[in-house]
Amino acid sequence: MIFYKTEEYEKSIASYNKLEIIAEKLKNDTLACTAYTMKGHIYCRNGNNKEALDNYYNALDIIEKTGDLKKEIIINSGLIIVLSRMNKNTKAQEIALRSLKAIPNTTYHNKENHVRFLTTLSDIYLDAEEYDSVLHYVKRGIEMSKSLKLDQLHLDFLIKKGVVFYYRKEYDISLEHLYEAKEILYNKQINNKSYPTIKTNYFIANCYYKKQSYDKAINILINSIDSFEESDKFKPPAIRSHLLLANCYNQKADYKQAMFWNNKYTKLNEYYLKDKDQSIDKIHQKETDKFQKEIATLEAKQTEEKQAKNRIFWILLFTSIALICIVFMYIKKQRSNKELYHKLMKEINDLASNKQALINKNESPKEIIIDDRKVAEIIKGLEKLESQEYFLKPECNLRSIAKKLKTNATYLSKIINIHKEKNFTDYINDLRIEYVLKRLKDDKKFRSFSIQSIAGDIGYKSSYSLVKHFKAKTGINPSYYIKNLDKQNTNPKIRV
Image 1: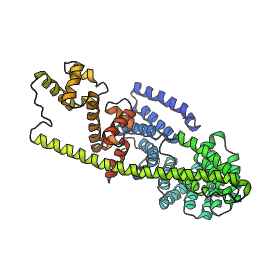
Image 2: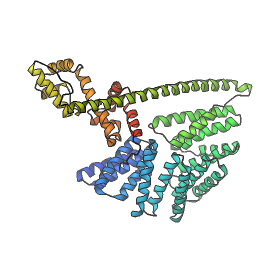
Image 3: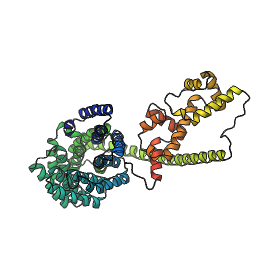
Image 4: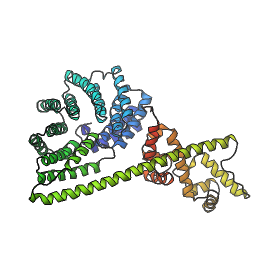
C-alpha cells in the first residue's frame, strides 16, 4: 500500500502477487480479494484496462461468495472507470448508480469513501459529456468534502466544475472555480499535488486562450511547464499544455515558437500513445483533436519564415491526405466488416436451424456410406470426440486423437482428408471457431472475457492464434464480432 500511494506501481504489484500466493495457500478469500482489488486499481491507474478488468472480475467472483457489500462498492469504483474507458458508459453508469444507492446501507455513508465514489461517478458523466449530471454530483461532493474537511477531494470537485463550465464556453465562471482550486493547492496540505496543479493550470490557460488573452495563457503555461518534474511530462494535461502553447504562439503569429512547442508536443504524445493501450484518456483525446485542427492554420507571413511555412504546409498536406485515406479505408473496412458480420450471423442461425431439423428427423448431419468397417469406426469415434468437445483441449492434436481412436496418425490423417475434405489442422480450427462463434453469441459472460482468456478456453496457446484463425474463417476480428453482439443486447445486465 505504501508503494501504491507513492506511485511505485511495479513494486506494489510484486507485493500483491506475493499476497495472492499466500492467500491461495491459506485458502483465505479476504486476502485474495484484497490482492485482486488492489492489482485492479494499479492497472486501472496505469491505463492497462485488460489486466484491471481481469483482476476486478476475480475479486467480484469472491464477493459473490462472501457477500461483502463494502468491498463490492470499492471494486465497482475501479471497474466503472475501466468500463467507461472502453466506451461502455451505459454499463458503467448502471453499476455506479446501483453502488451509490447501496452506500447508505454501509459504514461508508457520509464518509470519505462515499465522497470518493461521487468523484468517480462525476468522471463517468464528464467522459459522456453529460454536464448537468456532473454538476449534480459535484455539488453533493463539494458539500460533503467541505463538511468532512477532505481538501484533496474538495479540490478534485472544483477542478471538475471548472472543466464543465469550460466545455460549456462559460469561461469566466470556469476561471472562478479553477482559481478557487488553486487556492486550495497553495494553502492546504495536498498529497501528490503535481497532477491537479498541471491540470488546473492547463484549463486556466485554455480559458484565457478562448478569451483571446494569449499573453496571459502563455505566461501560465510557461511557468507550469518549467515546474514539471521529469515524471510529470508524460501526463495527459502536461502533454496538452505543449500543444496549447503552440497554438497561443500561432495566434500571435510567432510561428517559430509555434513549431518549437508543437514538435515538443508531438514527441511527448507519441511516447504517451506507445505506452498506453487502445482506450486512452478521453479528455486528452478530445482536447488534442481540437487543438491539432487549430495548429493546422499555421501560416508564415514574413520572408525569413518562408522555409518554416513550406515545411508546415507539406507536413499538414501529407497528414491530411493520409488521414483522408485512413478514414476512407476505415469506412470501407467497417462496411465490409458489417456485411461479413450479418452474413456470419445468418450462417450461424441457419446452421443451428439445420441441425435442429436433422435432429427432429432423427438424421445424422452428414451421412457417410462406407464399406470399410475400420474407417466407419474411426469416423464414429471422431463424431463422439466432437460431441465431447475434445477439440477444445490444448493437448488435442493428431497423435492424441489417433491414440484415443486406437489407430495411427498417418491413417487418421488420410481418413480426415478424404471424409472431412480438409486437413487435420483445418478440421480442428473449424471446430473451435464454430464453437466460439456460437458460445459468444449465446453466453454474455463469456463475451466479457479478454481475447487471451477466450483463446485459452478453446484450446489456443495465444490470442494471436485465435485472431488469425477467427479472421481466416469469418473475415472479421473477434473483437468486432463481440462488440456487435453487445450492441444487439438492448438492455444488458450488469456483471457483479
